[in-house]
Image (cartoon, rainbow, N blue to C red; front, top):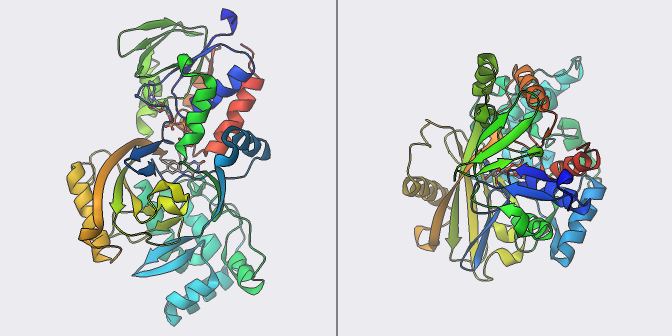
Length: 442
Ligand SMILES: Cc1cc2nc3c(=O)[nH]c(=O)nc-3n(C[C@H](O)[C@H](O)[C@H](O)COP(=O)(O)OP(=O)(O)OC[C@H]3O[C@@H](n4cnc5c(N)ncnc54)[C@H](O)[C@@H]3O)c2cc1C
């Protein structure tokens, strides 16, 4: 390979791997530096005996045909098309997610239903002038009562911030095409399902992470340097010159693609940028996630892809049962659950040790009658740092400024959830990676 085309890629998550994959296809020589001992970032599948767990409730959304085709080619017959509903756990009952009218009617009090209808009739007469924050968006789509019951509390628990402080983009297109009228249409025309992100998706037989394991194999592990945490990025104000790894190795670089968190990237730069940019970077925060993995001694808990917990008194936000994505994720006569608990540094969850979190999760779900203590065969806790960029209203300018500063280095490109500080899904990241490689002027 011609050294002129050598690209050093920082981070071996979906973004770094996708760039590596498309770059290799175009004949570029690459090296990926991954800080941990495995590729895949937040999209890994962990094996525990006969059980497999994803590091978060992942599914592949069929949104960009060319990318779906690419993943189909990569995974062959290992890629399953899954049609599985999700539910909201609410006061001991299961409500359809996305919300349906019949489910709401069945599970709410008459006084609440009347209030919801009145609020939404009132909404018709409101001029829709764009929504400044997530709370406004939710109220416009469903009215305050329905939103407060199921959306606002869930959102605030997930992101650790008030719904009126969060950008509308945190819904991640989940509410696209959904509102009180789509609920009515679905009820009246039972077959005409409104198109949305939930319910139908692709999923690999042996777990979501195998998409990125396959990509890594195509790239060839010889081009991936594991346990290579980037510690310093040296530059001359115009170009990135060298990266230094935690193990002391220094690598001279010609062209880099950076997928690392934007706030830590700013602080790795040598020389450091001005104080103002460092303060802006310090303001950007990520939400972390603890995931409690349980192996259970019965064949199935439910048929749902995910179960959402909006109740603010329960620390859990979501449960998924891997078997409902692929039957090969657990033995036939057993099942498993992955239970997500978001947290931020310094809060009441962050100070608990692994056993305390597992114990809290087990106590909660035993009390809610999901299973008995004697059903639990084994458990483990995993910690996902930088799971979600917390997109607060008013920070759009900070993000733009930091991104454009990093883009001002002529031999550096940025891509991914962490460095773009954007709520990106993997199909979108893969599409961006393809485009980035196709338009490389290195
Ligand atoms: C709970 C959860 C559920 C999700 N569900 C879905 C879903 O259903 N569908 C979907 O498409 N997407 C989903 N996502 C989003 C998806 O996980 C992200 O889009 C994707 O992981 C982002 O890829 P990335 O490469 O940008 O970042 P990451 O996955 O965070 O990867 C970054 C990589 O960089 C490495 N790194 C960090 N710092 C350094 C350093 N200093 N030096 C070297 N390496 C470093 C990390 O170890 C990591 O491997 C979900 C995310 C979460 C958290």
